[in-house]
Length: 523
Length: 34
Image (cartoon, rainbow over all chains, first blue to last red; front, side, top):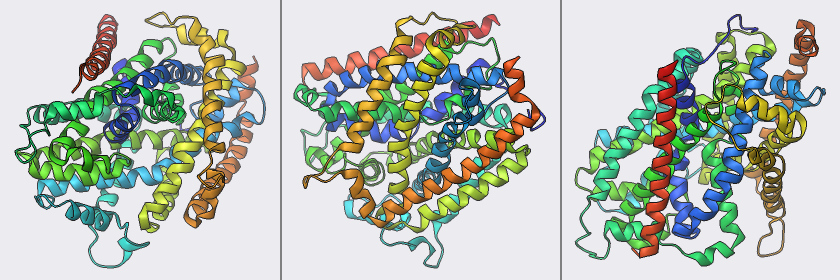
């Protein structure tokens, strides 16, 4: 490797924990319950599991296979891996998409991560125990995030949010600087069990809550009913199916560019089939069994169905405005509030460090810099991008724009590119060979056909529905985005990042050619 | 909570829990053999 040393995972469990840590994030606890409650309750699980089986798991396996395939041939970054899979000069530029997404999603994810740490701190100090006063928590959130006006966090005076953003930045870079097995793996090995423990504590507390004395019908059982009672008629609405597919993407980190990079460090004969499935199932456990049982029932007991409905459409509203009301009224709410937000912080940091690694791996193998150099370059990139998100905070516009373009649109594009790369370029026979080499489980052959035909078709449908959906006035929603300056600016920033990455990829390609890396592939 | 609600919840949560436990135990057993 150009950085002078060959990185590898320390153990089988380590890579599973790291991939699961990357996948388990805020979406498991805040996005999933809201989406399920809105899109059919228990019935939502039908399209959800269909999407998991038809797109989620097959694409995870495809990413794991392509990653190890590239890693065996000396490449760990997506541009390098893509150029191994498809011996065409254009392939490495397509691979740049798998750098763009983690890089730009990091711009805003680190900010949300800092809010979680900040909220945990404020529970510990008691500042967030403001009694039954929904407006107080909305005001706190607005002040904390600066969502009242652009530049609010730079308006002078002490800004606690900026302190926590600085702390989370430092923690992220300290962990990734320590390397793959010494930093990321070691941290995930501790963080995942701690997260599970925190979530279990909160789950036990929620399940043993008494009925609300002022509204006896607001019980935990009825809260579970609010989340799980099936509304089969919602299954006739295509939006429910799209919401389920979108949730699967979001939750599994499929199309994020992370798994392909992480899998490239797996030892040549090490299992990837069972590892991939285990990482996926651990993520599902956090989402369905913990996220699905905690958030909505707790909020229902204290807020009731009518108020709760006003919060479910937004993860931020549910997590940062609704739940503080709940903890304020819950016996032992201060400690459970701390545990909850600390768990969210751990979920966020295990994801955010996974976004840094793929891009830093590219800087190291593409530009020949060492870990310190790649850390410094990445720090400059992310400080600029996060600066944009923090400054354009009015209505969280900067965050929302990057999230839409990168976190919703481009991940589907990358997932489609990866499905085609695996199914049509590498080929399902070679892909199957790679997946089954060292495998500790048999993967049914029809999965290969699913990756080749079903997954791309499914992804094209999702992409088409995103690009072609219209508003009530009959205008394309996508074009409407450009009418909003902040959304357009977010798009241009992402395009600018892509252009910069393409320039770097161009020079990396020249470097790999000079080093004779491609010659080795031909021999 | 309705009976179908209980069924959907228990089947979903139960299946995911058992499947996760199965996968993790297989990985742990395989790691022990190495």
